Image (cartoon, rainbow, N blue to C red):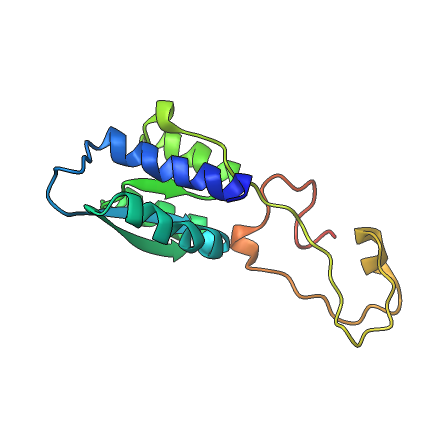
Length: 156
């Protein structure tokens, strides 16, 4: 198991121990609200986690971090809140939706610049996006834009 998966495994295991899960306990569901970008990683560790914790079934809710935060703020049942967005975690703490002592940084966002396989563009930095040969730029949802990036969608 690689380090990010191992960290996720221990994060979920920590949630179980904090919530009082024991092998002798009745079967229970562990509600994990996670950013959509974490879906593959979390699902990859789910089987091994559930095998070592047969009394626990993981129930996932994958969405954008802002949507998850809104759901938590309106009372959704959440045991683990996992997003790769520092700004959203800060907001969750400010709104007292998380227990600060349980906050563990285990993932992060990284801006990626990619071009289509059949493109002739040779982009090696974001400044290349301002070039005359660039006709279209696709970005993710501006409402969930990278909060740690020094620019906004309107100023690449």
